[in-house]
Image 1 (cartoon, rainbow, N blue to C red):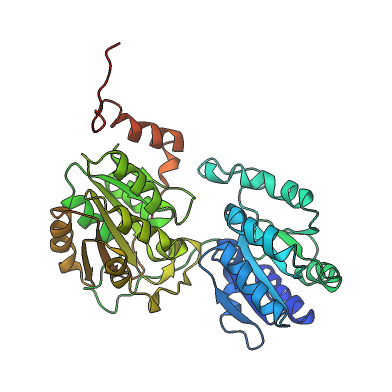
Image 2: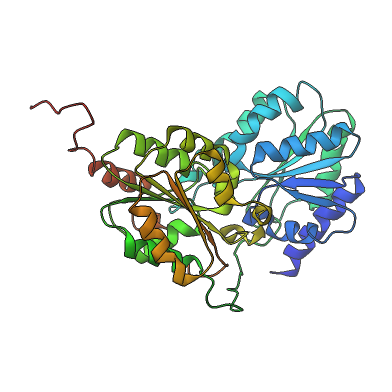
Length: 384
């Protein structure tokens, strides 16, 4: 990290202090990696990690309603998550919030990240349509504290304000997490993926966005794998729909703690419909690995207990490499829905995204092609 990047993060927090902000709620993002690290040990500003952007906005709004000036860190890829509380809570109730939005895919999306194509374009237009003022914070542009000061004028008038943050404006793009070698028996991401690949037979595997999908692609690519890029938190719903549509096939979900927390209510939907052909694996290393290692709040969440409570038929929890394959085999052989909670550690080499070699359209097309000749339950295929 250059001193300019560090100074940018320091100036941002100084600007927040200058306008009285004492609480920031947000989601992890590599664009905000350095400011979040500083906030986690900040003496005057409390940081509240949220499971998604809408939740962060609500937390900040609640604190502001009781007189505490607040701010929000959000990703533009999750802007849709905050539209409802923005338009039905913050704007009509005139709760003045300062919202920083990382502009992934702006001005153009990288070739390997097509999921950022649309959100890299539309956020300014949406804010214009909502008559919400916004400022830009970019590398080489005005200092962060100056931008915050300008946005603070809107807050003083009772309006909310947005700051759109370009790549590199605050530093901290790449993750520098190191594996915890204290206990070699604790599985890392590579251990989990290797165990799943060793135990699956004809099952389809659907993996959540981030390093789990990268690891699965690099260690065992096959047409029966679906790699999620973006849509964080929705892998459970995606797998449920597939399992309900194709009860004659079996599906395995590779999920992370941050992703599972983001839409934890999806587990209740799985439990309610109880697909017998679904195995849900949650890898819990208590970190948002791919965005810089910000901690999740999973340390106080027992995913196994949640799954039991909402109706999963079989549930196991493991914390060693030796337990992985036997537990997976038992759940793969049992009627679902089943959940395996894996207490793991940070580590493993993520490698390249699947989209570095396959387009995301290709990923979907080849996955769909596996099912095109299958006969749906109770149905038939007509001859051409």
